[in-house]
Amino acid sequence: MGDKPFEVIISIGKENTLEWLGEIPPNVEVKNWVNQIEILKRADVFISHCGMNSVNESLYFGVPLVTFPQHSEEGLVAKRVIDLGAGIPLRKNDPDLIDKAVQELLTNKSYKEKARKIGEGFRRSGGAKRAATFILEVIDKEKN
Picture 1 (cartoon, rainbow, N blue to C red):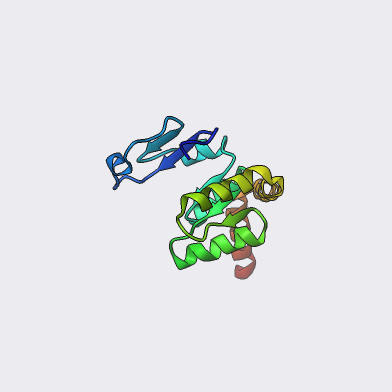
Picture 2 (cartoon, rainbow, N blue to C red):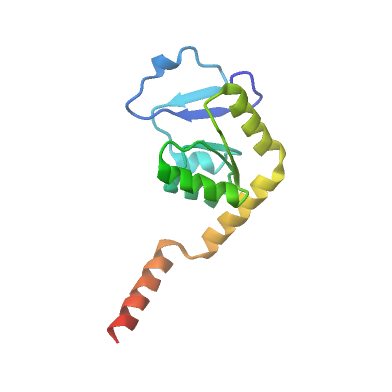
């Protein structure tokens, strides 16, 4: 991504060191940790392993995904993102395929539109407070 006309932010986790990446291009920022919410508020594309929280956060902010699951449960989440039209799969860790996937999400606006609509649904649902109220209402009905 070093030769691309956009900013790239990579989070490598706390266990990894920056040195193993070698020379970092000027348009690429590599951190052990980032505030994912703040990044997603301004991101155009998210390349993700497809953990449930990461996907929900991405879609909440209307950011389409390049899905690259590492475990079976992440594969199920990735499949749902793809089925909903809010992302595309990355079949293997290959620079050309990564570039192609990112370019597809940036140029085909249908992915962004689908992600945005899902995010609107998330925001309309009422969040954790509404979920807790609903659960308590169900419990109360069961008691009576």
